[in-house]
Amino acid sequence: MAHADTTHAPPAHEASAHPPAHEEETNTGISHRKLLMWVFLGSDCLFFGSLIATYMVYRGQSIVGPYPIDIIDVPITTISTFVLLMSSFTMVMAVAAARNGNQKRLIQWLVCTIVLGGGFIGFQVYEFNLFRVEGLRYETNLFSSTFFTLTGFHGAHVTLGIFWLICLAVISARNPAGRPSGEDVDIAGLYWHFVDIVWIVIFTLLYLIGGFDAGPDVGHAAAQGWQWITGIIT
Amino acid sequence: MSSNPGHEGALPHEEHGAHEDAGIGRFFFGRVPAGVHGGLKQYGLLAIFLAIITLVEFLIIVPEGLQGSSVVIAPLVILSVIKFFCVVAFFMHLKFESPLLWQIFVAGLALGLVVALSLVLLFGVFRPTPRAFSENRQAPFEHHAEEKPHYEALVVPTPCPVGACPTPGGNVPAPTGSHPGQALFVGVGGCSACHTIDGVAQGILGPPLNGIGSAAANRLPGYSAEEYIRESILEPDAHAAGTADGLSQDYDGNLMLSTMAGILPALSDEDIENLVDYLLTLQ
Image (tube, rainbow over all chains, first blue to last red; front, side):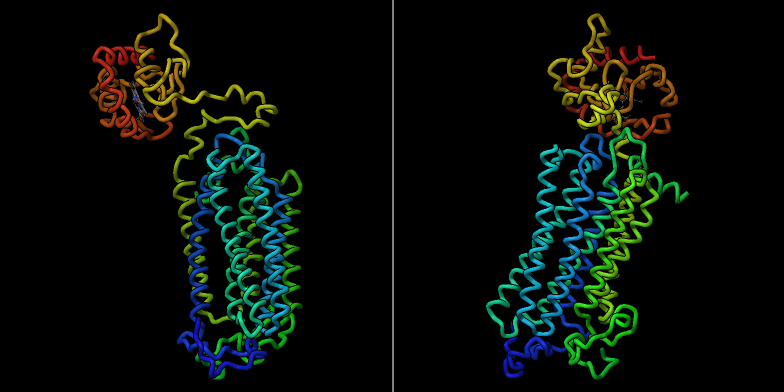
């Protein structure tokens, strides 16, 4: 969006409060960038959908330990989930600040979001490392492979989001005159919230529900694989 | 936005007066004009609400009896669906956006769900589970071995690579004086990597061969047990054993075929006869 339509550019102090003059008209009434972001998020649903499904298919199928129950720490992950959730809140506040053209607030909220996001990644690094020490490596069993693939890709999304937000914060610190625009922050926000909702799903399925799966000698629901669905269908 | 001439050409949220306060009730439940946004009040409230849901989710699985039980699945899923859509509708302000964006996102979401569901149905429900397939090789995790000594009894040594057993000792060694076919079975024949014979070998990829000496006679009409076993070794794909033969699962004839291609040249005709002879003794 490097339009340099400066003739219509509003004065700097109003820059983000008003529609940026260079915003082109689109026949959907939605800016192309925003539309593209939503299309991407829709497709990312498919991406994570497949990874989650893969985990669920192999859930309770590992024949060597450690099994989730040996290793998953639900209380700690509840805290990191909370941290990520709060980062969504600070993010939406950053978007609001950008929309109101309040550059100082924008930077403050962005920094909060970056710190919280970094905290979440910190939890994940701690968790992955603990798993490794306890003997759960990527190739240990079906649980570990599917778990690390899914949560690893999610962590990568968060990391990317952190870099994105750092860029926004740096840009707005160095250039207080109207950049990033409300929409720049808005789009980063969409991505950030999406990563949060993916975690909502992962947290529920892998931790709250799947975190107690045990080995083959335990006859509880998960150990039966998905046979209970067959029960419902028939 | 074409339905609303006043908004034409401008992005809804960048409309003048975009940050007018919608009020809490209207923000969450009411019909607000496109472009209305929340502030600290609305978003803060939502954040608290979401945090409470997370706490409730956690509390649900605190009682040990509920951990991993299927009773909690429904409430947990419902709670997280609520969280999911709250974030999408308000934090991602999809509620205040053009319906097109809803449609795009919901289309992606629906497609993702369909893919996920099909995967689970195809590979989780309608097929034998990998665990059932390889249950007899389950290995304990350290804690389990301590707490459940019977685990030790379940542990099965991993079979040596096909055709490359250093000594027959990789599995149960062939007792001296046993049938020469048995030595071949656990040794150069490599059969023990895939087949189980109680007390002799514990492979998991092929059907167990206990009692094959008598069962073989009923596999194919017109075949004697000896003919069937010989054909199974020389042309494993000719008849793939499966559930129709009263076995617990269908086996892949090509699996043995491809491996045998590497092993057969090393076996003399006499070796084959010894193997057939040996398997015939398993009644």
